[in-house]
Image 1 (tube, helix red, strand yellow):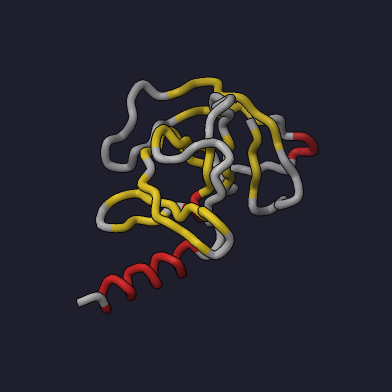
Image 2: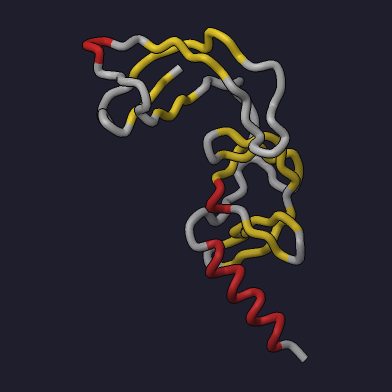
Length: 135
């Protein structure tokens, strides 16, 4: 596992979970763990704030889309699909797991579809504005 501390932003320390708690706290949704970290050159000191990145399972051969593509319209999770240059439509998606800002798409998109990743909120605003103008 990779550990980063604010005091040494360019360095990555390595460690492993030595002991994990028995249950997740329902309020904070946290689990206590003891992580043994390689402390080369004695740089790490008690009380330092650290962020640990735990390795997770991989999702192979799955369609993944980034956070920036997702919009909520009328309570549904949607993306904008480009059918042809400058022509977009809304597609409702059903998502699975999320790993590092990438969401597994279970339904609603097919491989090869072009989706809007940057500027999707602008398209959503235009769509909502147009729907308010209709009689």
